[in-house]
Amino acid sequence: MSKFTINDIGLKVGLEIHQQLATNKKLFCSCTPTESEEYPIKFQRKLRAVKSELGEYDPAALFEKSKLKTIMYYANSENSCLVEQDEEPPHNLDKDAKELVFIIASSLNSKIFSEIYPMRKTVIDGSNTTGFQRTMLVSQGGYIDVEGEKIGVQSICLEEDAAKLLGDKGNIREYSLDRLGVPLIEIALEPVEGEPEKIKKIALSLGRLLRSTKKVTRGIGSIRQDVNVSVKNGGGVVEVKGVQQLDQLEKIVEFEAKRQHGLVKIAEKLKNSNFKEISKSRDVFDITKDWKGCKSKIIQKSLKDNSVIKAIKIENFAGMFGYSPHEEIRLGKEIGQLVKFYGIGGVFHSDELPNYGIENEDIIIVRNILKTNQNDAFLIIAAPSSKIDFAIDSIIMRLTDAKNGVPAETRLATPTGETVFLRPRPGASRMYPETDIPPILVTNEEIENAIKKIPKSWDESLIELQKKYELNPQLSEQIFDSQFIGLFEEIVEKIKVNPTFVVSILCSSITNLERSGLNLKLLQNEEIIKSFQFLETGKITKESIEMIFQDIMAGKSKTIEEAMKNTAIEAVKEATLDKIIEEIVEKNQDIIKNQKERSIGPLMGIAMKELRGKVSGEMVNNILLKNIKEKLENN
Image (cartoon, rainbow, N blue to C red; front, side, top):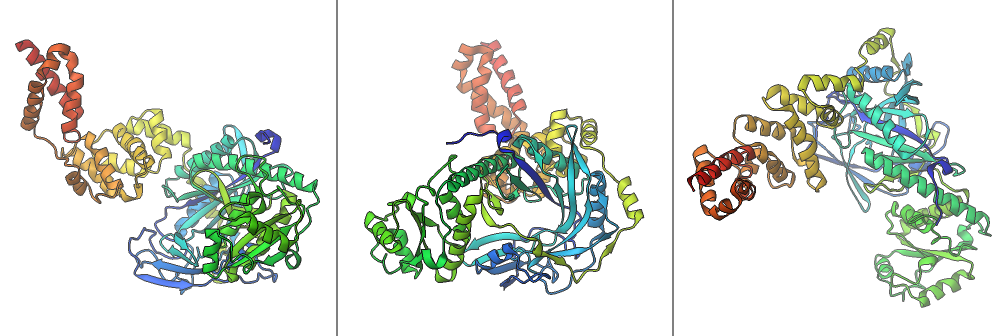
């Protein structure tokens, strides 16, 4: 397998940050963007591709159309209206969102245009009921300073966020309209060269600048990074969508660098071969009847589902599907991911057969039909007749592109830090003017006002946070960069509680529970605030807060009160506590006799098993130590 370094391959990465703006309104109506649990309104649509003003179809739109999806929408009138359902024209642009995007643009020294033209960006994957996303180019140019280096800004746009995907099974795709229309700022940076760690620092710096405004939404899903990645001599630029966390961003860039370098190596090998282009009329054969006797469970299930089975001959391609210049980077895997987005389980290729229940006899049948020699390869695909031709067209195009290295495409980030094929890259034909909204004029007064409201820098905000709440630098950075900064300030302003302890619970305890697989979405901010109120009034102890949150995040309880009952947490009265500790001391006199005051350790463990969450560890320790000393003195 090949080895490479980032410097050798000429990696270039351009970041696009998409951040929700916390205006408490949607961009073109007055609906409040809240999360719903119930959806009384339900309707469905089928979206289709239309030609642009130039008479061309956008390739990404055609790809989505080929999936033949029915889109099911779920809505609640508490957070969406007829505008989101595309049954009513958009209202006026939200003034708060407009002002905020001007402030952010001014913070980045980006030149704001005197007129803003709303545009429609064709999107027919179902994430917009209209079949397009409304977007406005607000400014161009500018820079962000990252450790003394100026990273250029290409453009800043104000646009609508997409609907929230609920599920995608078979031919049905489901969305809720909670998030659709929420104001979103898109900041596209100039491509930069460097290690993945540098890209992570740039994203962190830009995220901190946005958070300094205190007007952006926090939490998973509120900020998303799209990453444009290319390598030297690679061919196309790949756009990776849906990166939500910084650690994931670094892994994505590393993986995509390796993948693209591997595709370049595959292209070099193909250029030195006699690989010929594939003809759909000459090289594709229907083998459905010929493979009725195949014992593979996958093939038998396909036949039972009335799928069509076709074989594709690829001359002088033997060994290329399985060739792996880097671990897990293979052309066979690329093709498998491609067809999955048509709702097709995958493909079989000659480099991996016999396997999956397909035997030598089946392979001989295929080779005889295709008239292949030992240098030729073939692919087998089984799919419904409505989908198979679309998939085969894509496969042929992808294999032809393999000679050129990296195809320009849009890919999706996975939680594990890899990327999978999503759709072809969109073209210029996807954008056209919005006919329902007139151009928006920008006055000098608005720009001057935005410059006056440029927020303090991240460093200044941290110093202010340290002084105001007496936090050390590390904790200040931790809480400011987290999604809990607003909640933290609300708690310490309303409740008499140690700010350091609040940061510890929000940034350590909750984060650790989430990492262990528990669901943070189940823990509402109101319940977090209530837990600190209960702590202040003595209803619970510090030690019990994590136990309560664990119970709620595990889905066992919805409220603090329910969790207290489930975990048997109830503050112990002082007289009861004294009695419990006296009994522990009496039962463990041998330990005290042998270990003297060092017996506090084992006895503390025994006491906390019974009292954890009901009384503070400090109080238990003090009373236990007092009892041990008395027992030693009496002896």
